[in-house]
Image (cartoon, rainbow, N blue to C red):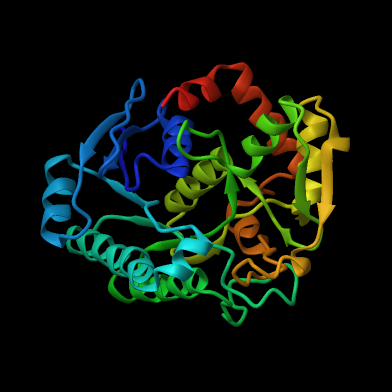
Length: 304
C-alpha cells in the first residue's frame, strides 16, 4: 500500500523539493496556508496549524500515514526582529503538529537545523551541548524539546539543505547559479562552515530511517564540511560558470548582521551507521542538482 505523506509548509522550498523527490513512490499532500501552489501528481490541502483539532481531522480524513513538519520561520534576521512570532511559529506550531500526530499514532519527521551551537567546534554530534547564539537557534532548539516531549517517537532531523528555488524563495545554491549566469559578482563567507546536503538526499534518507523505525535526533547532512565560499566555487565548477566572480569575505567583518555560528558543520556518523551507507559528498549532490535541472525539475519549481 502506497504511503500517504503530508508535508506542512507546503509552499516552501524544502516541502516542494521533498515532494518532487518522492512523488513517484508516495502519495504526497502539501499542506498550504496562504500561498497556493500546484505541482503535477501532488495533492494540496489548506491546513490550520494553529489548531490541534483541525490537524487531527485533516490527517484522519486524508488517511495520512506519515507527516513531515517543514513549516517554520527561518530568516535569522526576521526571527531576531520578531522573537515572539518566531517562537510561536517554530515552537508552538511544531508542538501542535506533534500533538496531532501523537493522538493519531502517526510517524512524524520534524525538520530542525544546524544553527543550534556556538560555532566553535566542527562536526558536532547529536549529543553535543546545545548553545544557540540567536533567536532562530533558540526557538529551533526549544522546538526539538517540545516535539519530543509530546511525541517521543518523532524523528527530528538536524540539517542544512539546498534545492531548486521558486519564484518567491531562493535556495543558496540557485542564488549562486542565477547570479553567476547573469555575470554578477557575489560575496560569500570563507569563515562560515557547514555540511550542506541536497533536499532529495534528505528526503530519501528520512523515509529510509522511518522504515528502520529510527526515532529521536539524527543529523542528516552531507559527508563533507566546507565553507560557504568553498561551496559556491564547487557550484560554479559543476555548472560550468565563472568562479572568479565569487569574492571571499569574512562574517567577522559583517558587524551589522545578527550573530551567527561560524561553524555549523554536523557529523552524520549516526545516520550513516543506521542506514549502512554514506550520505554522499558535495560533488555527488551537485551532480544530482545539475541532473534535476536537465530533467526539467528545476523549471517545474521555478514556475511557481
